Length: 112
Ligand code: 5GP
Ligand code: ZN
Image 1 (tube, rainbow, N blue to C red):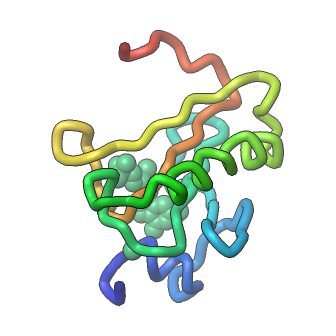
Image 2: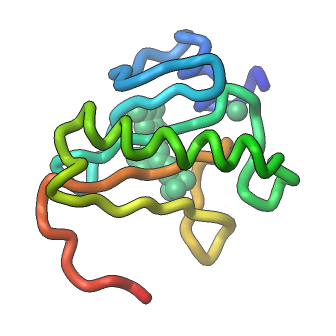
């Protein structure tokens, strides 16, 4: 989508710090990190959110990349949190499906 921030990042029209890329997804560091490691994983195909009829196999592929990307960032053994904000109450601000991977410090209490 031409007016989607993350589609533009995937295409390289907007610069980003690449962490990982394959035919399914692109991963890059968050511009405003909330932890020492804060990486976003996005599918190359545009979906607005988890509510956007995302195929189950694509969701599986995205989640399967998480440990590999955590390892690249050096947090696979120390641990990490995976977050997918969906909609207004979750504070989703970019409407291209993305998986936050946070780590590099103790993240404190769980929300749930
Ligand atoms: P959300 O709040 O939608 O779950 O997460 C969107 C994330 O995208 C935020 O953590 C925000 O810091 C990040 N972000 C917004 N604009 C940019 C950008 O231009 N580049 C990068 N690398 N991250 C961005
Ligand atoms: Zn998009």
